[in-house]
Length: 388
Ligand code: PMP
Image (cartoon, rainbow, N blue to C red; front, side, top):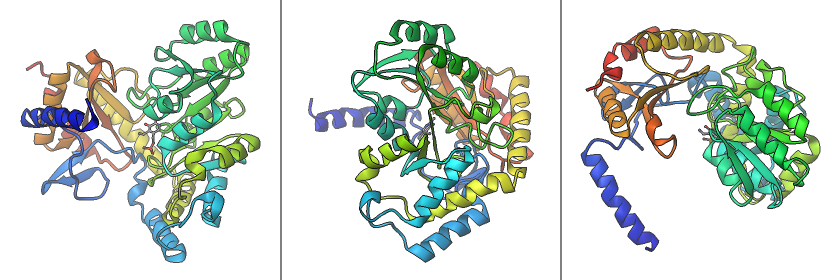
C-alpha cells in the first residue's frame, strides 16, 4: 500500500472513531494554556498541560519574550553554525547548564530533538543502548539504528542482567532513563542505576523533562533529590514544561557539548530558537526567585492525590504532578474521557501503543495554578471509577 492508500484507510478509522465519540486528540482550544481553558465556547478545567509552575502565563516570562522579540526581531534567521548563534542563545545555554550545576549545555529547538538528535549523533551501530520501557518516543527514535535492549520499567534485576552480559563487549554501553516517567509519574531508582552503571562501566543519560521544576528541593529534579550531580553523563530535558516555552537541552561535559554543537545535524543545519526564547531565561530564574509556585504545586499534588485515593482509584506509584488513573480497557477509557469532557473536565486518554493494551488510563496533570475548587470539581466526578 502506498502512503495515499494508507492515508485513506486511516481516514476511515478516524471517521469511525469520531462518530463513536472516541477520538479525543487535537481538540481545538481557543484560550491560553492554564487551569481553565475554552473549547467550543465552553470553559473546561484543564488537566492536560505540563505547564507545572504556570510560567506560560507568568507576566515576567511573557514580558521577557516580548522584550526579546522587540530587541532582536521575530526570528534568528539562520542555523547556529552559520550566523544564527546569538548572545541570547549563549545566555540560555549558560543558564540551563548552571541550573544543573554544570558549565556546558547545548540547546535544541525542541525537547524531542534534544533526545533524538543527540542520541543519533552519539551512538554508533557497535554500541549498546539499554532503555527503560517507559522512556519517551524521542529517545526511542534516537536509538532506532543501533543495538538496543528495552528493560521492563524500573526492573533493576533486568538492568543488571543485561549490563553483566554486555560489559566490555561494546565501545559504549549507555543506559537511558527518565527521572520522572511521563506516563506513570513515578521515579527511576536512580541511585541503584548509577551503582549498576559504575559497576559495569556504562554511561548514564537521564531525561528529566517531568521532574524539572517539580521535584528536588529547588526543582532540579531527581538528580537533586538523589544528590547525583556528579554521576550523570547526559542530562536532557525540555523548555516546554516547567520553563513555559519550547525547546530542549543536553547538559554534559565540555567536550561532549562541543561535539554535539558541531556534529549533531538537527542542531547544525536547522535554524536556532527565536528571540522569544528569552522567556526561558526568565523562567529559569523564577524557579529560584519565586519558590511559591513549587510550594503551590506540591500542595496541589498532595491534595489531589489524597482525593483520588479516597475515591478508590488506581493511580499506580506516581510521585509527581502526573496522575495516571488506570481504567484498563481502551473503550471504557475513551468513554470516561468523553464523559469527563461533557462534565467540564479536559483530561487525556492514554491508550495502546503509548501504554500496554490493558493499561489504558486517563492522564491527569496538575499545575501550581489549579485552585482547590478546580481539583474538587474533578474529584466530584466519582463516576471515574464507575463500572458502567
Ligand atoms: N521527554 C519526555 C519525557 C517527554 O514527555 C517529552 C514530551 N512530552 C519530551 C521529552 C519532548 O519534549 P517536547 O515536547 O518539549 O519536544
